[in-house]
Structures are given as C-alpha cells and as structure tokens.
Image: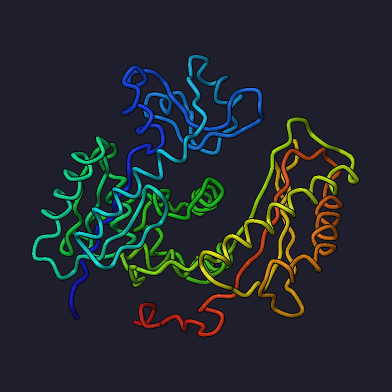
Length: 364
C-alpha cells in the first residue's frame, strides 16, 4: 500500500498577523482581534506577545484586558482576511488537487504523488510569505493527525517533519493533551487515569476509554498508535448553519429572550436563503438552540424534524419549535442569559451511506 504524504499548513495568528503586516507599529505590542472592550465581545485571536499574558481566542475581551491591561484590541476586518486567504488557497491549488480547507487559515494537502514532500512544504511556506507577507507553520507526516501535530511543533513560522520510520518513537512520548479534540476536561479525565503520554494511552483497556469518551475513545486508541485513516477531502460538505448574539446586558425575562430569538430567527432564515442560492438546496433534518448563562455555563437543545425541510420558507412554519426549545433550555437553569444562538443541521452523505468503522486495528 502506497504511503501517504500529508502537509498541514496553519497560518500563525492569522487575523492578528494581517493587522501587524498592514500596521508595523503593532508588531511589538500585545495585540488581539475581536469584539471591542465594553461590548461583551470575545476575541478571535491574539498575537504571540499577548499569549504570554494568557490571552487567547474565544476569551471575553474585557477579561483579556484584565490579564493584559496594555492589550490593543482591533475589530476584525474580514474583507482583508478573506483576500489573504484566497491568495493562500490559490497557492495550495498549484501544489495539489486534493486540498481540504479547514478554515480561512488552515488546510491539509495530500501530496502523496510528490517525490519530496518536505521540499514542497518549504516552497509553499516561501511562496505564502512572498505573496502575502505572512508566515505559516507547516507539518509533514504520513497522515492528517500527525501532520497537524507536526505543524504545531515549531510554531511560529516552523517546519517539522515526522517520517514513517519515526512515527512510533515520536508518538509514544507525545503528551496526550496535544491530541486534537482533547480539551481541558478531557485532559483532566486522562490525568485522573494517570495517562500523560500516548504510550500510557495504549495500555488502557478500550472499554474504559469508551466509557469516558464515547466514540471518540476509538479515535484516541488509533491516534495513540499514530494511526489516522481519514482522507483529505477536497470537497467540504457543510453540516450545519447557525447564528448567535451576545447581549450587552444579561437578560432574565423569558418574554424578552423570546423576542430576541425572533429577531435572530429572521437572520437565520436570511442566511439560509443566501446559502441555498449560492450552493443549492440542502435538506434540513434538525434544529437546535444554545444558551450561555451569565456564569458562562452553557446548555443546548435540539429536535429532529418529523419531515425533512428543503427551504427557508419551510423552516419558517416551524418557528414555534425554536421558541419551545428555548423555553426548555431556560428551565434547566435559573440564571440570567448572556448569549443565545440557533441553527439547523443538514442531512449529509454520511446519513445516506453510514461508515462502518474497521475493528482490525484492535485485533491481535
């Protein structure tokens, strides 16, 4: 079987880097991009100077300023970021016809047909910098999981290669907290089980991992052995679409929240119609609501529709279901509400053709 060669490209603090490129005076100061102070917004990203103070993405802006009082916060300019992203993606297309864009600043390239993937990765880094003035961290490895780990290994502006011969030695000592999908809670569970490295992870019975992590427990077992059979997907299938709003003041009254929900619902149907116009009709199979309370705890509810919907208009006659889901979420906790969001989940190819996972990696 032919060994795969996967390149993972991750732009360094992308939004912040674009701002520093366009305004050099920002290069040596703590900088973040996101919601402005006093608006209860959150950060999209921060530069590496700010990260030394503990400032990171998805953090409330006002809290970030407590950690770093000299932090400069810039409201995002998505037009600039999209323009840079388009250039970067055009570079990827020159090197591979199998490119999976994960986001505006991250992508996988399957370059299995090339003789020297490392040299190609270096060329991609150089061309990105020459054409955009931006740096990227790049990983090269035999699969997507390892390539992503490799791109994080020498950030920022790094290039790291995991060869097939080095996979086992590298993965055995890899801290489990570096596995994508392991967040703070997951790492806390693993530490309680005395699992610190992937070598430790290999020794834990599969049923224990499944008890704590569900289906992800199977992925953890494979990752701990350096195995990842996922293909680079040149076609990305949208699985959901949602909108949300953060209130300037916490709201306690359900009737006011229901009015806010109605406005947000109008935005959702508008975005849905635009999505259908651009990409064609998709089938809506579920609707969902999420709520964040003033203590930053979250809850969500979703409902599978009795019949699949194929238009924004059909969704409109189900609007009362969103209101019912919101009431159900609010009953879970009596706190004031900071944020509400709502959205839909689309029927996708996996629903029609479910994937049977292989058990061979677990056989003796």
